[in-house]
Image 1 (cartoon, rainbow over the protein chains, first blue to last red):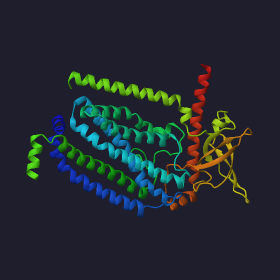
Image 2: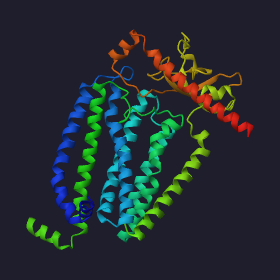
Image 3: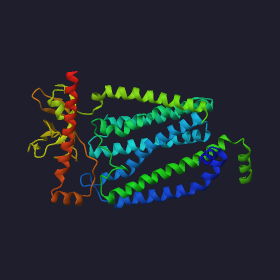
Image 4: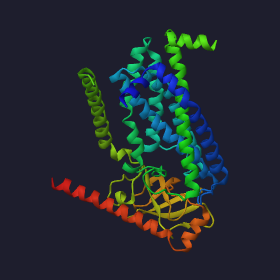
Length: 246
Length: 171
């Protein structure tokens, strides 16, 4: 077990193993998102109160899930990089940040579009919306901090620290709807409790959430692989690989 | 794990926990401001300011909505199943505005104890269902049960809060 993790920490091993996993994750992501969106947008029943605008949930909830999960993944990668000096972790964290920021933006945007017909406003400074906006700023901060240093090592360390401190925001986002009075309703989708909607509405949502996670894994692996080649371009195995391909 | 790495791990985890405690205490101190709206119980207890813009939230009491036939004026009661507050509004209500549904109203609390609303926002709960299911539930007489469960929950929370206040006063 430990030997496997240590091997995974070596760029060359990671590059070889990820090549084998990658097609599966891309295929699963494409399949799940295709099935989930067609099912959710065309076949799932409309809501008894919101009608068809309820279908925004099939984008909004998976994006919001991913926005938070990616930040946690980034913080964990940062910890692994700072303590164990595993470079792969830092590369992965750097590659995750833009996707996380994009997902946060999608969650905020789809939420605003959804808010107009249901709540009667597109924005309200309630705890959930505000903490989500802070998450977007944190992502932008992590990306900017990484770009602000000329030395890669300082940039990586600063970005890791910000990600780890920023992760405090994640439980605040998650529990904001329970701790305070908010305009946003409590969580609909939970793995642990009974779904708050019937199966024919819940299944496409589950499929979309899984599809988004597969997409995140596939994209991060792909981008980390190119980052490995970029950072290790002077290493012999990369040169050999390039010689082989070219 | 080498001692150096262990030390580093503890330092990092320690700093993050300290930051978490700082944020937690700040949010705890600001909790009254983070709440988006006053509930009718808080208004009845006199926590809400008069003649200043505030937000109040709760459920639209069933059977309380009365519309003016000539104008857009509408009056309804917002309740948390413990206390009520009357709201008067002139304007277009959001599509989701319904009796038994959540609302947040933005307006001023008058000295007579009712709210002059400038804006009414609909809240919705986390339950979604197809129209047929909702109809079937209603026919079976199930839908009010949800509200009762909610009412019990709110009442329990208020009791707990009242208990807190009492203990604070005796201290």
